[in-house]
Image (cartoon, rainbow over all chains, first blue to last red):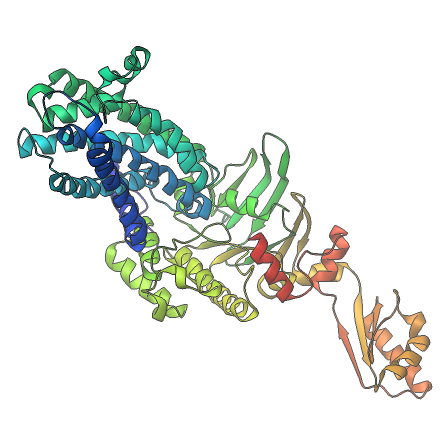
Length: 266
Length: 331
């Protein structure tokens, strides 16, 4: 009467994917239904581009390339990292409004609530990176390597942000409401994105900070993105490999952590 | 093989906040297939906790429960295929349209696309939401939202439905509409567990009523049995005007087990044996030459039952309007 009585394991995986797609679809529709939020959340990183390109950029000296070229890979990474805050806010909101309660009483795959949320945020990040590439071109950014390597770089930073989304799902599920989820997220992201190579060379920082800034994952992902998008003096196979390792490692840790937190959420 | 009850709970205990709040201290209930159980109690009595455990959302600290013979903890995924949950906490997505919400729940219930579509149309039609189907939920009235919420719970045609305070905060017309919908469900054989603070609601919809207060069951039975347990009947006598009622009140004093309630031109006597006292009333008044406008016997309301059992009045017994206003704040 309701659903098939016995589902084999292949059937279970099929339904799991179907559930993730359904929840992703629902979250994407949510973005479209609040176009103001979509517009301003896209405008925000564009302001950052303009700010660093025209206000701070003149005072920042980088080796071997124009600052705008140095800046854009950093801005991409910073923007998609901040996109992970949306994951925590979205989940806190669903929890607060009782939607997760409904999901829990449905025969859907448990993982779909988190899978659908993080996937929707990934789609949104793809959209935002595309827009920002366009904006970057308008303010003088040029790819130093080729389109294929540029896309590989974009893919890498999107995967990194996706893994962060799973980490921030823990924040969202632990917060009493969406406003708190937001303020809880920023202290985690500020040091990671600003004490990094995203906007200024790490060598310009004091020694004690360099030790952190040079080795933390955001810097490595930014360096890898520069390597793939700019090449030349910024080419670094080591940064590319380390960034990839961080992505794999973070996914391996943060996905189970998110799932564990979700199961514990009453 | 004897058939398992639709819903069974045995000695459910749930403690929140590391032992500080004892939400349930041993609640047992059993609901026969195709019947409606009203879980009645004031705010904070533990009604919602019972529903959350039975709908697999929350695990009990001790005790067990089963739906159509399937354990809610060990066979949670099977149970989720058998139940529908609607009410104050399970909700709908306000960014989606009415139809999108139903499609989402249908897909997550693992119905195929064609079935989901026809089922959504059918539910929108029967809940009178077809015109609003393509509007985001944000634009819906409170009554429409509840109807959609209920529709969403029904997409998979679950044989067991949990309705957690389905009409809290609704205006009287919307409550009537929802009641008709729930009565429709019962007609097609759905087992319903309904929590409510409204005695009137339990009286109208439930076959059996379980009264909970402070996390335990304090009474159980059909609405009629619960009222009969009070052992009293109310005799209402009306007169031409208030002064006649005054005179009659003095004459009839001895017949009522409690002080006579005097309201305008009407008197209310609380008695053990309704019919006998009614005859006595008429004889006494006739002998005194007092004309009687009308006489009625009525059973005590569940309100009276509740007051007797808990020692406090049901939170929302005053008026529907006051209850609705309160529900809006609480819910």
